[in-house]
Length: 252
Image 1 (cartoon, rainbow, N blue to C red):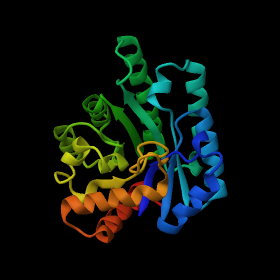
Image 2 (image 1 turned 90 degrees about the vertical axis):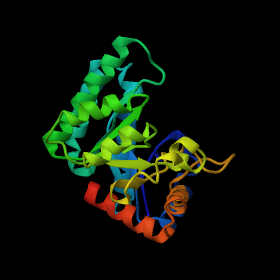
Image 3 (image 1 turned 60 degrees about the vertical axis):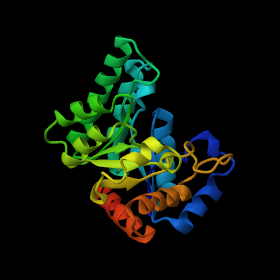
């Protein structure tokens, strides 16, 4: 199994990070830590170096941050990604998050930054990790317009089934997070999606499948179990296929 998207660099793990990673190593083949800010990218690179061969990193800038950050910060992030491109397996997370914003200016700001990261992924021929919340169809529309962009992962997908089908038909990937363990909406489209285009993730420290517990990469096992249950397959088979997908997308 592989956790295709998590944030073990976040401060929530400052006191437990080593134990959390050790528990993950006992169950998983690898974890993909996603940079979501300038500092997050730097912390991700340190983890990649410290846990080489187990932790892999993606470097990006979260859209919520993008709607507030000035161009100086964005340019610094893009510059550092360029410098460290050989140490990353994908560009992202990046994308659109319209959940907490409604004004046109902030949305346009997110779209502009999103396109900058798409162009960076194209320049380096890297996969793209997309965060889309309450903007899934818009993010898909933008990504699809870049015809030479091939490997795209819609992480922690929570949109509708119709957009999910379009994403898969385009040859992109959908990553299902631990939220599927308790959300009926997220469970509703599992059976509609082919395993060949699915990845598994925790998005930890968020979305724990266990009440009162902080989420962590080892809990990606619960995603695998839920997918297996819905599709009437064995967890081993689901884990094997989704791991193979992650290895292919991120060229691990």
